[in-house]
Length: 614
Image (tube, rainbow, N blue to C red):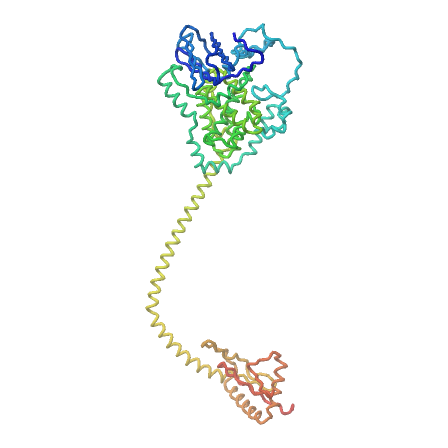
């Protein structure tokens, strides 16, 4: 036995265990220790090492024996002790040599059997808790404990009241409000309602059709893919476990994490263990999604992705079946993260199966990574205290057969889009129909454009041919037009003279037209308009014309001012608007005789003087 001086502080050194069919090798790193002052003790499942100030005590998963074959060496450059211990049963495989937290636990603390228990509850305890009662156990005075709240949560539903003390911090970590007063059934109803409200069909369809990035992410291979391939290949060659090298290797940082964990034992009944296993699947699914979409890199969204996609962490959900776990994870992938594609759900499902097939070492490696991510995120570190730390300690003590049975049950579970309850297949079918209609419209538009181009080309060809023929007939047309124009001019001039004689209006001194109202001939732009002919007989028109000539002769004998003034005053009364093209005044202000319009419209204005009125 080791005796330590008062006030002595022990340091647990870094260590590593390996094995072959005959020996268990313990490698202990003790820098700055005195190589000449060390003690080693081993017997059965116990191993102890002491080299001031380092102390290591291990509880081994198999028995070792002292038979003279044991060896020990010290490397001064590395500061490491290497100790080879013979196995009591050669060829025996020691399971869980990389579960450091479990190895550091004292042998007596492995029993989680309560001091006082009900006989009805004893049947529900795990077969792992079958040690006899220790009568030498230290007695602790009884203290009345505060009764637990009605709605527990956390690892194995062993915690309660945490959110009452840390409500402000946890409001950014979980989605459920006031979980201490919310039953599990109500949590589930609220979670489903929140997921249905958050689902966005447009986002889902965008990732469904524009899936170049999704295809790239699906090609990524995380570390467990290669490890699983190696394990599968070696299992086909050899069935002896100790002959195969370890497929999962822990880094020194991960080993340090395990050494810092305080060993615990968990009293879980059958129902609580069931919830713990299903919660483990839920957390691993979220972790696999996070690793794939970020291709193994960590960023500020890593913590959010894991806790948001896991209903165990975000809604404190307690699942009752593996199918419920898969449906919850699938719905949350399609509602919350950046990439919302069902293929990412199925790929995370396959990744989780591979991790479980690799054994609890692979599961522990994933949990340690999650623990580190949450520890670096504020305030997500609280989830380590509620779930992840306990999972890291508990998984090291789980039997591999149980983990293999869990993996087998997971493989048998099926998941499809119809299970999501989000009408994914209907959305996709409707979107495909819309795409087909758009393609048909585009195809019809392309055909019409081609037909239009063809018609335009035909029109241009016909125009060219017509222009050629028109140019040939242009000369003859111009000659015909000139001859017809000259003939029309002669005819029009002759008709104009006739019309002047027949339709010249006679205006007397009172401004009244004599004879019938006949429209004057209008000539413009070289074209004539045929006026309406008078209904007056030609003989009478000649007589009236003769009378007007005599009147004009008498007018010439009157003073110009008197005759003109009478005509002008009479016309201004009837037509107030001046007509400058009919009258003009000279510089003396006297009226002059009416002038004919410059147009070829011969209007004969005759004004007679009423001598009696003068």
